[in-house]
Image (cartoon, rainbow, N blue to C red; front, side, top):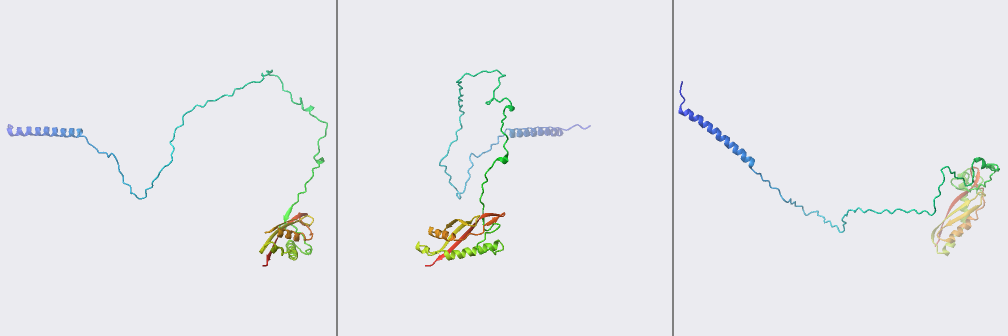
Length: 248
């Protein structure tokens, strides 16, 4: 067996020393990292630059500071009841009598016989119905239009007859006397009542004198055969525009 030499012993000791030194260095490094303080810098203010374009000044002239309402307890004043008279105490079995002292329905009987509705005479009010000449079932017949076969022919014949009567009798010379010139229009409305007579003449124009003249002429319309609705005579409304031109 070969004896170990001195050189081999030194190599074994050196390896152990190197291991111990490396371990110590690692431990010191880890400790230094743990004890190290990392400082972070936090900016105190963040300044943002806003371009000057599109800047709007807002001013508040009047403002109100909100003030919370304080809890105020309201005093409730109770009404005091004062008895003017002493209450009357009655027994529970006390009965209230009727004002008429009627205890049963048999006592409320009269000797009068019941009224028959047929015996009551209610006067009937004859309501007059007025219908436009354009919608009445049977158009009034103007004297000389008896041969007209239907409503359209009766209306046409009546219009022609009334136009001729107005042209013949209307005095247009009164217009210049009152300073009227140019085209004058008179709107006339009248009724042919249930007897065929012309009534309720209303005229409207630029001057009262023209209204009077138009009413005067319409009053010259003769009586007609009245119009009918549901086979009953009715009032018929007729509108007539009178237009003429004042010559300068």
